[in-house]
Length: 391
Ligand code: SAH
Image (cartoon, rainbow, N blue to C red; front, side, top):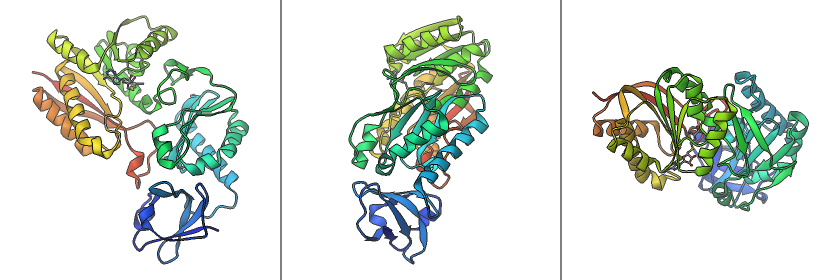
């Protein structure tokens, strides 16, 4: 067996629930593991810590997959995937579409699987998973009736692992799907969509919005395929303005409105959000509920200060278009941004727009995105709902 021994004290983070060993934490390596090989990891006193995928290309030298020894890796993958499936089915018993596997959080480091009915869209972001992909495909086919299995890879992460920047169709073809989130249906065209096709992480938050929109005017800003706004219309919103810079996504919103028989008062704006908000302020346009769901402004730690300035500006503009006594629901999916700093720039933004704010709700990603409390990298989405006083 291939073995890796850590330097003194470098076991602490692992014992605290973290699943990565960084290359500078390794004291010695026995035998000569290849990228993607399973290695046994020990502390400096030769106590067994776990089993993980080795990668000499990456700063993350080992990604732990198990804290105990494993007889058969096929059984391990099956157990992990079916355990993840059971968790989703517990919370979403009537849904066929959700994030089935969320990487480290489901103890499958570097593997994301989004399930859209019987189409399974994968992101393969670690060498170890790539080496075992045939096994994983077989499990999806035999145990979960997969008809189509293909990747929509994150090339940035693959590059860090030294994996080729490519996508694959492993089974069937790149399909189109109509999915149901338990209330709203969405058309998904994988050839045109962003990420794996749908933002499942905001699913539960879209349901939260239903509590505050009845008979209200709503702006769904960074709407993508319209998730928040569609839920708002279903819950009786008076009107929804959908704003996104992508023509394709706004076309998708229109299709989804028809698909759900929601013929309420909807308007569409293919526009940069900053321009949209500045024009709204100039025209004195106000909404009862404003929803902001921007893409990640900070891709890495270095870009965080600039990203925080961007978020502050965005939220400052957004506070100004909320009616007195209305709500701002605001998100950030930059994992480098910690909760405390999220609130810091929101408070600054509110102050600059002379808004007083009351935090009504704070949440994260949906229940199909579990987190490891010992591994901050697994929590990224922040979702805050404020009541806004613009007196
Ligand atoms: N709220 C959506 C997900 C938003 S994803 C949902 O519930 O599914 C972020 C969206 O912001 C993408 O659709 C992208 O096209 C859009 N976007 C990114 N930058 C933008 C900008 N500057 N102005 C307008 N839209 C932008």
